[in-house]
Length: 198
Image (cartoon, rainbow, N blue to C red; front, side, top):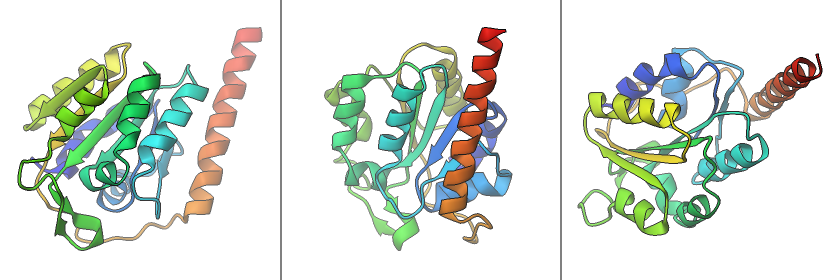
């Protein structure tokens, strides 16, 4: 299973959700499908996409939040799984693409390559309430659909091939992306407030 195929299959379902990606391949593959103002590509901050996603989910309980993460990033910030388990916002879906490689920083093997380090088991042990391990595109979409329709924080570990995009480069700098993402959230919150008052 390829991460790019997972993201492509998921893309139509992300229109109304706030999406935070890690740096590198996940960000590039999502961007190449077509940028949306509700996408935030967390460049140059490996390991922190889940932390940003948690903050968004807790502070914006009416929004659905999706984090596109990777094994290398999760391994750099393992404590995030315990923090996610503690707060467990029901509007958060945490997708971890495990390719057993630090693909975006040189292709070095990650700790999950040998099979000794099991991110799904670590997430369960940390107390994350709903954890799935998937190895096919069908299983991935089935788990994602269940997570999106449910009312419980979900963690999905998807075992994917160590294959990345054939290019890297976005016509969107991090400060601009952050500004536009924030503006999207504020405008959406303003529209919701107006509807509730009306």
